[in-house]
Structure formats: structure tokens, C-alpha cells
Length: 255
Image (cartoon, rainbow, N blue to C red; front, top):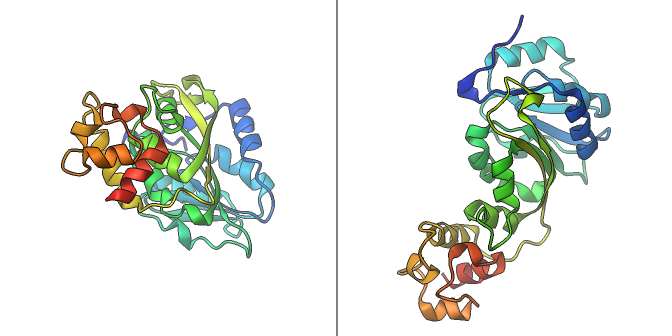
């Protein structure tokens, strides 16, 4: 029976076999690894991953798709977790001794940012992440200081991960085609992120980018003094999008 994609779940199913093969090559799954796929959908990527892996965990919200997955695959090889990836405890997935979890998925565009922050909480347990996201989101993730796309998402994720945009995927690779281009991003957790309290970093960065047209001295007024900005190596007249990650970390340490 044909599955009708559900708008409320942000369902756009990848169907292009060449794109799928290219993603699998980028992920390079190997037997014995612990891997979880977020939003397996109609299992186009799931099948290809299972060709290489001993076992695969998947997290799926759509009940109809959960039933289909359970009926189609050997339950000893495909472990299906029914539920919302935003609520799912990824740390609960068993990982072989000395290994880390690998995370992959075609992330629903409507929850991509909150899901990335949810996963950042378990970054020390993760080897790498490969995601398909809206191209615009990936561009923001990997943006350099001084570019228009550099913002809160860039700083917070770059503090935690090494990231690269691997390749762009056109709308016609999906059914139904989304209205935007997509992109594949690779995220590798940093073994030694710059030491600071992540909540304080979040506070500074959120406030700094709250009014992009204002200079950072005005955005951070009441939180950071002009003297502290200078001590952190930040020009009080600079705008938030020109300030590099390490200077945001300096400011977070001052809180």
C-alpha cells in the first residue's frame, strides 16, 4: 500500500538512487558499528545501511511507517524505536566496548535546529553525524565569521563539532520534491572543545545576535561591560556576525 507523505511530519522521501549511493559512500558504514538512523521513512537509506551493518537502530514517529518497518525487516537486525527524536534518549542505544555511536538521517526541516541541539548534549558519546538538511541550514552551520549566514547556530555548533558541507541535493531527488535545495553535512564532535559553560555561552551568543543591526556593546549591555569586551579581545563597535567563536568563549567565561 502506498504511503502518503504527511506534511505535519515534514515528510519528503529521498528516492534518487545515485544520491542515496553517494550518501552511503560518505557515511561508510561498517559491520559491528553502533548506528542510529533518524526518520527512516520508506527505508530507502535503511536498506543500504543494513547491507553493510550487522544491526541498525531507527527512530520513527509515524505509526504507519513503524508498522511497515517492523513487517519488512528482521527484528534482530533492525531495532525500531517508535517516538519523537526530540524526546528520544540517544544515550540509551547500546554501543560495543571501545566504540561510539554513529548518527545519520534525513532530518525533517521543521525540527532540524532543536534536534541538532538535542544531539549536542550527547556529543561526547558520538563518533560522527551525517545529516540531510535544508541547504540554507547547513550553510548557517558551517558559516565563517563575517558572512551573512554566520549566527547563533554557527557559533553553538562550531564550539562542539568540526563540520563540513559534503554535497548539495536538488529537490527532484525527493518525493514529494521540497521547495528548497538540501545538503549533506558531516559533523564530528570535537574531543576538546574550548572550555566554558555551555549555558553561559548560549546566553552570550543569543543576546549578541538578538539585534543583528546593533553593535555588540549595545546588544550585550547589562550582561557584559565595555571593559570586559575589550579584555575578551572584542571591539565594542563590532557586530555579532564578525566575532569569532573563541571571543564568544572568552565572554562566556566572564559571566
